[in-house]
Length: 134
Length: 154
Image (cartoon, rainbow over all chains, first blue to last red):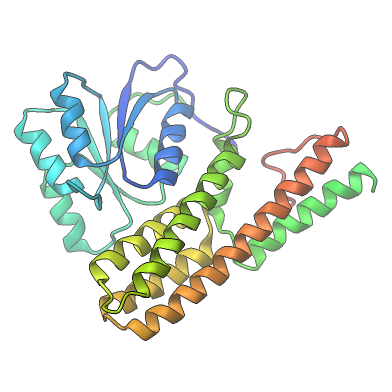
């Protein structure tokens, strides 16, 4: 419902935003913030891999598909090869079934079409069994 | 102008942006993300959109002016602009980008030039309208009024 933002004020969840678009980075960071989820932002799949190599780990990764250097499909495959078991939700403007299928098969747990909204993010959290107080 | 009148003008002006399709419902997400810890979020993210779009449109113009147009470069720029305009609800910019991308796929240089002009037109329109919107809000706040984030009058 408009105006009702679920609260995860005491949430201990952490997330990683992986997106090359500055406006999307700002929106997704704030969306997660608003739900009480501490989050970091990186610009492409390679940086997502690098941040995990440095020892960081997250409960949730919001993974864009189209990015330079390393795209979302490549990064998701790489993270799964590395044994990263975080929940990964693909977020993209791509809407063709075969494109979504390829992204899911790379190792996603969930998928949402952009643009992200509060309710789409809550839907991701519900689908991935993260507790959401509404 | 009396405060009540200013607030009514703001509501009517905001409503017109939706009626004309310049903004879509995605724009309504922005005030929902604004809170006490980040009371300027809407203007910040819109400013970011302006800065990013100015840069992309400049790069697009340069790319399309090359003797041999490299569509491997052009298309990602349009994709970026489509993404950011979609994220903030700048519907007509986004729609113009969708058309642009289809001509990129066809490698139609002439049509791409026309599309760039169309995208620029829509972008300057939404930029102008949003700058006016923020000015109206500032006038209300300066007069001691409050802006209700969800009160868009419809």
